[in-house]
Length: 389
Image (tube, rainbow, N blue to C red; front, side, top):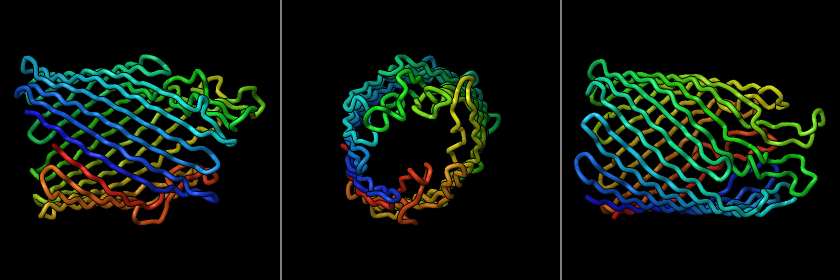
């Protein structure tokens, strides 16, 4: 059986800055997909994605960014005990920046490529009871070359409806243009420079959790985590103790820990509620030789979310997403609550039209960054068309 799908978005809007002109953001994207079921134990899918984004920050810089993605994935069951998934991916970005006297990305026009491959094997050590999942992702990027990210997970189902699981994994964040190619001001002598030898940031993550399906309509899960970070981005003095120039480097390490509680409850066949609460602490420290002094956490200690999905019949759907995010003390970002709404109409099985409102409770609100350089998120509305064929 074959399936094809195509969807696209057009968007535009502004993000408010304090004491400055608004940031103009516009663009669009398209997603195309193909899937094929070879047998009861084998299937494949292919996804193509294109995104065009233009942003203009008056007096600072303008950017036109094209992103192309191709992803292929195949899943099959081997020897009854091995559920194997493997895939390949390719990403190309074409980035053109209009520099200014305030800052510059050098070179101003780049094309960057990422190649990825992954494989994962879920092994049924004891069918319906004990499973071991082993996997690895290999990535090649234009900045640091090859990166390997392995993972392992074990899950045990002691009785009907409950499951205990533990996992360990390694992940990286490859350098971006900001890390390597940002300069401020736009002409020398520079006060801030991207690090030409900036390496990938590294994460080693440990997880332990329990998932319970109390009844057919209710599922609850509790997950705890402990993460260790290395080579985090830092701001280093080039000629200490002189405060400038400064350069971006990998002079920080850190850890985070916390827990996440999630619940999914289906009130009726047409109405579903999902909620989540996260409590997290983040600590960072300078590595030997680092001169960085910007080590305070930029993450909120707690977040709460509630999502409602309601099928109104007659091809109409209504989704509501409410969230509360705690304050970020060191950046003086106050806590805030927001609401997103989505109304969708499906006149025929292959076509869906939707209207989405984002951040509807406030005209604008801050999410991160210090007050002097903060960009606030404005209330926004956009339309979406999704067509399956």
